Every structure is written in structure tokens, then in C-alpha cells.
Image 1 (spheres, rainbow over the protein chains, first blue to last red):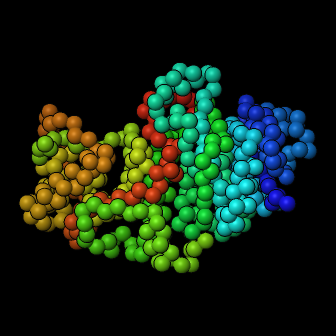
Image 2 (image 1 turned 90 degrees about the vertical axis):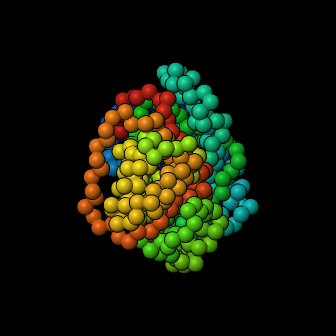
Image 3 (image 1 turned 90 degrees about the horizontal axis):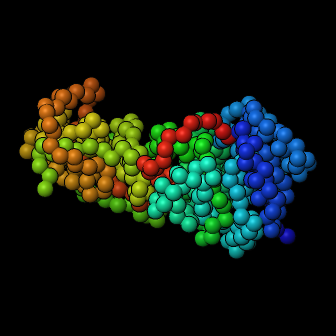
Length: 260
Length: 145
């Protein structure tokens, strides 16, 4: 018997695409056992969209606190052994959960399954889509280190901790870095199983804030992995490269209490 | 060939960079590589964020750390070469006019350590969905969850 799956969808003023997102969840070949929508203070027609789904959706409303807080709320409500996320503007492909659950069956030590992502643009942004031809964002498959591809053991959040609610953007990268630094086992499914929609108000467009938070997250990650504070770095070769494997071993040796 | 007075500047479209507690963190969003620099290297990076040249950087490093200009020049030249090779900065010709003298930092610089760029390559996948977006037109920002 497969483990129970909870799907958590944070939404803020997502009436335009929420139904498509939900329909992609209910079209899964392996359906989740529950779908939790955390309304992060929407003021548009989000509730009206949700009413159409009746008791197929567990709904909770909170004051606007950002996507990290909304996801954390959903994790707290989740009853499943595995927790998945979907953003209200994105889509799952029908085999998404089935393929990822199979990964958990094959790898009992797996903590987090991720998938490849393909971006697409709304019709209104056709010109933007055309301008992105040849850009990496238009690649047919991109590694999906984003919540909407995740299927994670629920207790992974107990060990790694919740999403950092102080970050309105980049909180997912911060979480993934904490997870890998802590020794969690993450696996990237080679298939595209999530479609990410580009529209007018993607948080990704907040380039400056995103870059600031990415730099912060990397700095914190390096601190976690280091045996010594930066001021104690010794003279050495002018340029050195750290591979993830070696880095991880060093991390575990230095911070045994943070091992996952 | 890079001359001592070639203008150097950060590639703002492709680099996420921040100095935190004296450590410069750089992420090349085009390649997914990321880098750390501390001490004199972080100092040099802080100067580069306002454009500079090897000559001026050397002068600033020598003054900041009280070392011989010859040593500073050699160390700066090598670090700048690495930053160029990694695509973190670009050279943009010679200055057309006098440059504004660089401010002396107020904090104590600490002992001089040969400036060093430490490179990491283990997170490229994690940054793949956040590449530089130089071609995207500006669109109104709206909050969402």
C-alpha cells in the first residue's frame, strides 16, 4: 500500500490559474489523499474558485504572511506521510506523483524527490516567450529545485526545519541548502513532471530581492559546512575548487550534530 | 592583455553578489558556480563594485594593509585575472577621465592574507531556474503567495 500523500497549495490572489493547478492535481494517475489550500490573505476571487471543489479541498485562510508561512501552515495540517507542494499558477503532469512515489519505494532512504521543470508563458507574454528563445529558461527540461516539484517525507521538515518565513523569496533555495548541508537524501527525477508558468507577477521577476536572498543563503550554507570561521581561512592556492562530495564529507566531519 | 589602467567592473546582469560579515559571496547565475572571498580579496571586490583598475586596486590594497605596492600589484593582478576568467567581472576599456579617489574603509582591515578566490561547483542545479534575465521586459509587480 503506497504511503499517504498530502498536497499543499499556497495561494495569494491566484484566481486566474488556481483551477488549472487544482485540476492538474486531481488528474494525477496516483491521486493525493488530501489537498490542502492555504489562502495567504487573498482579496480576489480565490475563495469562489475553491468553492467549486467543495470538500475535495481542505481550505484554510490566514493573513498574508508570504509563501513560506503558507507552506509551513500546510505542512502543519498535513496528515500524509509524504508532502507535495504546488504553486497556484503552475501545473503538475499526470504521472508526477506516481513516478515520485515509485522512487520512494525503490529508495527507502530517500527524503526528498524532485523533478525536472519546463517553463511556459501565458499568451499575453508571447513576445517575452519569443525573446527567450535560446535562453536557458526555454530549455525543455530544467532541474526543479523548487517546492512545486517536491515530494518529501513529512518528517523531513521536523529534522531540517520549516521554510524560513523571514524570506519572501528564495526561501526554497535556503531550505534545499539546509537539507543538503544536513545530509538529507535528495533525488532529481529525470523526467519533466511540472510546468512552471511565466506571467506578469511571478516572484522570480523580483530579481534584486531574489539575488540578495540567494547570496545570503549561500553564505549561511558555507558557514554550516566550514570547520573554521572565514577569518581563520589560511593562505593557500590562489584558486581552489570544492566538489560537493568532498564538501559533504567535510561537513559531516565538522558538524556531526547537524547530520540529517 | 590587461593593462594597469584598464577599467574593470562587475557583470551586474549575471552575478548575485553580497558582502556579509566581511566575506564576499558571488554567484555566477549563468554557470551556477559560486565563490567566496575574505580579507583582502573581499576588500578588492568591494572596490570593484564601483569600477576600478588594477593600478588603483593595488594602491588601495597597499594603503589598506600597509604592504609594498609591488606585492599588492602582483596579488591584485592575479586575482583580477581569475575574476575575469570566471566571468565575474569585465574589462571595459580605459578610463576617459580622472577617477574619484576611493574612500578609505573605516573598519580595521586585519592582517594581510594573499587575496584568494575560492570556487564551488556543487550547486549548479539549484540555481538553474534562476538564471540571469537580461531580456525580460519590466512588468508590474504584484504580491502573491
